[in-house]
Image (cartoon, rainbow, N blue to C red; front, side, top):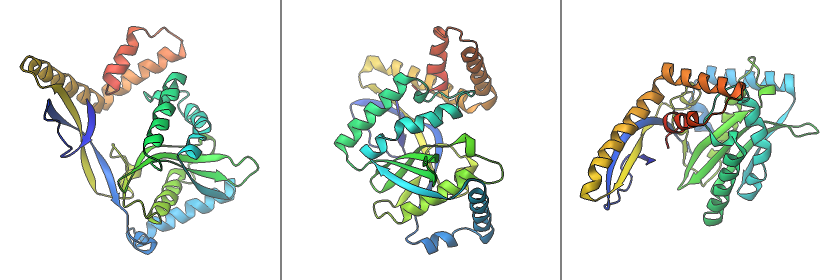
Length: 273
């Protein structure tokens, strides 16, 4: 099973069923910065300029940088430190929380850039200080004129309520992509989060594709998989239920309880595996 967009190519040798999983906000990039500025009301840009002024006054000047392929890979260790700090006392099913998962991610990315150079991108905002401290970052992939906003985060030490560091970063990122002739579309990826919908009201459906080898005796298996994944999606979308499960895993980690079979619950309910 894997995530696909609408009308994704079907393998004729497989039983195939697409289950609605989520929606992705999508921004068609304008052909100029002037058009981009005109796409939002003056108050939006006023608040953004105010956030930048407050940030510079409190933290100092910053620079926005772009790294591709191996230059990007060289930053992963530094970025993971920020990731682990952010999720130190919170739950996440993302693979970076373990050294094994992080190494597996790096290995996959190295294979990708070997086969498709120029596809892997990391963007950062750094303070213009002696340490060039990273205060915000994103990991993305450029595929067929679309930038996929795969992962992002901010340095929790600099994330204050008086300014919106995430909005500052996204404005810098989108502006850089408008000036990049390789990119025509910004795909925020799954989740209708408010910070994404600040930039666009256009969305596209994302489906979880269930595939099973097309043999008569496999059809009952295919139906069972559809039922299982439908239940998993409903559990994931039920915030009350999923939040309590996450709190349970936080407690397990806090007291260093052996996870054993509990890990199977995490893998098969909270993660789409």
